[in-house]
Image (cartoon, rainbow, N blue to C red):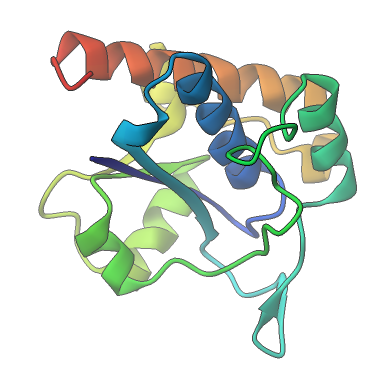
Length: 165
């Protein structure tokens, strides 16, 4: 089992888009049974009274525009924001962050990355040190989707080359 946790600031845009894009990709490749994929936030800004907000509506729209959400595996209707935990570090094999602030803030929560699990998603696309475009500020959910797809495709290729798939 390959356990992947995508992380962004609020868990309502970039990380859930990443979660459901990768779920869609592995489902189409008929390898979903080899993965446990989720997403989380470094902040609690989108969590109120113990309940997280749903995926931001424009993020839902970009997923739907690409046919994601139509299967039980990619159904994002129940997704709610949650904060990353120290236990997530032990459970997940890969904690893939949207930007360098997410890397830093994840390590503040989980502790030092002694097992080399925390990385930028776009590093897997050969875009070392680059951030996924943040649509909360840019409004460009299409750019974010494109970045995420590049990162997820690169990540799957990394797994293939390492004989994990």
